[in-house]
Length: 336
Ligand SMILES: Cc1ncc(COP(=O)(O)O)c(C=O)c1O
Image 1: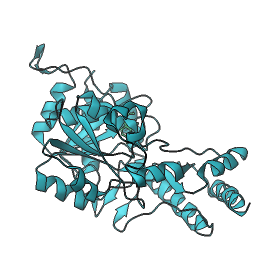
Image 2 (image 1 turned 90 degrees about the vertical axis):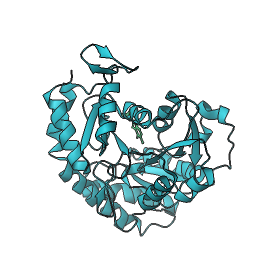
Image 3 (image 1 turned 60 degrees about the horizontal axis):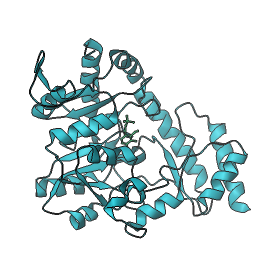
Image 4 (image 1 turned 135 degrees about the vertical axis):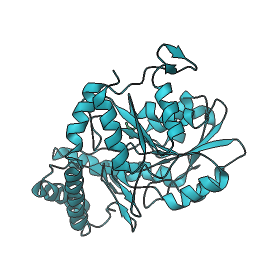
C-alpha cells in the first residue's frame, strides 16, 4: 500500500540526501532498474559501471536488456576509476552508474564532469553509502538519480526488502512513481508497462523509527573504524581502508586488504571471528556475464581486490575490546 508512512519516509530520506524527491520502491535492485529506465536506458544501450560491485548493480542493467560496459577501479578506494570511463565510452553509451562501495563516495568531481561533458545520465548506486559525504555534499545528490537499499543488513535496514530512488528532478520522480505502480497515471489507467514495486507501509514505519538513530550509528561506525585503523597501522602486511581527503566514509563495511587473505580469513574463523569477502568475483568474471567475453587480466585492479579484500566485523554496537581481539588475532597471523 502507498500510504502516509511511505510518503513521510520519502521526504525524510530525500532531505537526508539533500535532494528534492524520494520515491519508495520494493528494493535497491528495483530502484536501479526504475532509475535507469526513467533515464531512458533501453535494450541494446550500453551502460558504464564498475566491475567491482554487488551483482545487483549489473542485474539492473541486464534486466533492461542493456549491455554492461565495465570499468576498472582505483586500487586505493575500490571505487570506479574515472579515467576508465573515458577509455570505455562509445557512441552507444546511454548512462553511467557510479557505486559508492563499502560506504565510501566514488570520485564524484571527475565522474560528474565526465557525465556532464558527454550529456550522459548519471545514476548513483548509493545502496551501501546512505549519509556518506563527498566534499561537503551527501552521496545521492550528485547524479540525475540515486538508488538506496534498505535491505536488513544495510546501515539503515528494514525488517525485509525496501529501497528508494532519490532525485532533484520532478520529472524523473513522477516517472518512477508511475513505473512502480503498474504504469498507472490515474486510477486504473495505465499508459506504459510497469509493475508492483511499492515500498511497504510497515517497512516505511520501521525505517522512520530507525532513521532517528542513523546519525548516532554513523558516528559509532566511524569511531570503530578509527580504532581498527589506529591498531592495524602497527600490523605489517595489512592495508586498512583508505579515506580520501574531504570524504566522510559511513563504513557499511570495514574492508582491509591482505595478500594472504584466504589464510587470514581461516585464521580468524578459528577464533570464531566472522569476516566476509565482498566480493570474490568481479562482475566481468561472473559466469552470468561470460557472454560478454571478458577474461582474467582485463580489469587487473578489480581482480587483485577480489583476491585481497576482507571485511571485518563492523556494526555500531561493536565494542572496543572486541576490536582489540580482532586486531590481536590478525597480528598473531601476521607473525606466524
Ligand atoms: C552495491 C549494491 N547495489 C545494489 C544492491 C541491491 O539492493 P537490494 O538488495 O535492496 O535489492 C545492493 C544490496 O544488496 C548493493 O550492495
